[in-house]
Length: 374
Image (cartoon, rainbow, N blue to C red):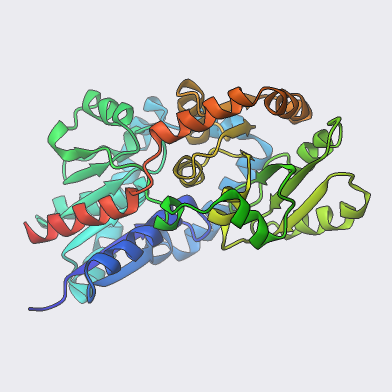
C-alpha cells in the first residue's frame, strides 16, 4: 500500500502559521511513520515576488500605522470589494496548484492561514476536486476570509470560535474545537526548579519572561525600563526573535540594568523558558498564546496588534488567563501587585489551564489521518 501524502500550507516563514504546520507535521510522522509530508509556504510558491513585497508592506503597516490594519481586518465592506480580485488571483493560482497536486498527489491539504485555504477551496471548485481540505485557525477570531463551502473540516481554538463559525453558516459537523496546534513538548511537565537550573537562573527570584513574537516586536525596552522601578529584585528572560537590532541594543545595556537579565535571540527552548517563568509579557499571537496556555503560564499583554491579536487579547482577558495593560511603563505596578498577592497569580494560572489544549497538534494530526482513511 503506497504511503499517504499530506500537504501543509502556511504563508510566512517566521509566523505562528508556520509553527502550527511544523507541530502538525511532527505529530503526523509520529502517529503514522512513513507518511510523506510537504510543508510549504503557499504564498511563496504561487507568488514569490508578491510575497516579499506584501510581507514588507504588512510589517511596515503593523509597526508604523496599525490603525490601517485594524480597519482592513475582517472588514465586510472591504472583503466584498476585494471579492472579484480575490477570485481572479485564486484562478491564476489554481493552475499552479494543479501542477503541485498532480506532482505530489496529496491525500489531504491542511491550511493554517486563510489565503492558501481560499486558494485550495477555489481550486476544488474549478476542477471539481474532492481532495480533503482542512482549515486550521490559529487565532481566536474566525474572520470572513476563512469561509468556503469546499472546506471539509475546520479546526478551531475554542468552542466560542466554533459557535461564531456556525453563525457564519458553517455546519457544526465540519467543526472540531481541538485548539491551536503547538509543539507537543509544551504539554510535557518540566519543574520550575529544573528549568531554572538548566538555564542558569536563580531559584528564588520572581521570573518574568518577555517576548515579542518571532519578529521581536513590541515595547520590550520600555518594559525593561519599567521593571527597573520595582522595589525588589526580579530576573528577566528576554527573547528577541529575529530582531537583531533589539538584541544588540539590550545586550549593550545589560551591565547598566539593575535586574538580572538572561538574553536570547531566536530560542529553540521556549517551552523550557516558559517552565522557568512565573509570568510572560508578550504579544498575544495565536501560537504563543497556545504555548503559554499549555504551560499554564499567566500572561500580561501590552500593545496587541489590531485585528487578530486584539481579539486574542479580549478572549484571554475574558477567560481570566491574562491581564491587558495599555502602557508599558505601568508593567511594574502589575508585577508588584502579583508578587504581593500570589493568589491573583494562581488564579491566572488556573484559568490558563482551563482553556489550554496542550494536545492540540496530536488531536489535529489524528483528524487528518481519519479524513484520509475514511
